[in-house]
Amino acid sequence: MSAFATKGFNANRYLSLRPTYNSNLLAWLNNYHAGPKARAADIACGPGIFTTDLAREFDSVIGVDLSPSMIASAQESAHARDITNVEYKVGTGESLPIESNSVDLLTVMEGVHWFKFDTFLDEALRVLKPGGTMALVGYKYPEVVGDTTRSFVNRLAFDEQYLLKYWDDGYKLVEGGYQPLVAPVKASAFENVRYVGYPEVWKQRIPEIEVLPEAWIDQRQSTLEELAGYFKTWSGYKAWMDDPPGRARCSSTSTLNSTWNQLNKTLTDTVAIDYPQFAIVARKPL
Figure 1 (tube, rainbow, N blue to C red):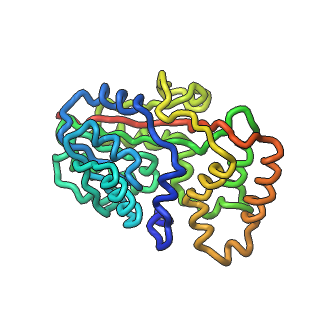
Figure 2 (figure 1 turned 135 degrees about the vertical axis):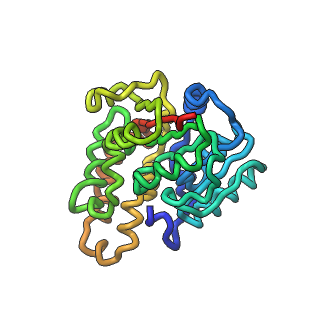
Figure 3 (figure 1 turned 30 degrees about the vertical axis):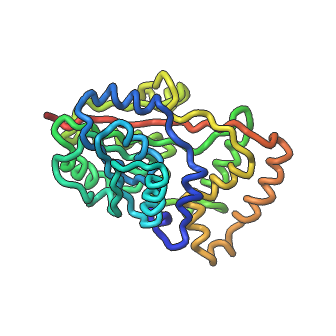
């Protein structure tokens, strides 16, 4: 997470390359929440990808992020779209700049794996109204449909000679579909805990996951250039870029070039990208 808060981070480029959520997600959350929609909070909101979606459903929304450049990009985006019921604040998941018992829905989209989780759960319970909903949503690294590129993605991300040492521990939670976070949520004061995911393949690894009927992130058509750009939005890549001695010792540069050239020989100019999704949702007791 700290990689996104460093000087020189380009939040607008991050916004243009990251996946977006479709209407199935909001419909599912509305059905689960089934409560008041006075105020929502989007934590680790980044450049406001989902925050502005919430603004269509709730009277007011607050977005919180550690990165000032993310907050500036989110504010710029909201202003450009004439969205006036969203407020953005710099803050952390462990110390939310939000009043107690003031939020009907609290979301964390692809960000809770950066938090000290027990502290965050206490904060979520504090700011949620009785009966309020918490939704922790994530997505795994992209998979190119019908190709072996997944092996390239995994090697780039998790091989010791590439980016492995530049990831915070949170990446393990993403790879595991947030499964280790389910037990702490169930052990907390939250109730009606549901653990869901898409597609069906999650069941092969995590039997207790509930498979969603529809995807929350649409399959994306991407050029190879855009796909390479997406890889460069990874926090591990950003941390590597901020470590010149590491770059001198690491062959990631050649991987991003020579391996990419090999990939170009096996793929067309445009590829279909899937993002396996997962979420933990729970309710604060009345």
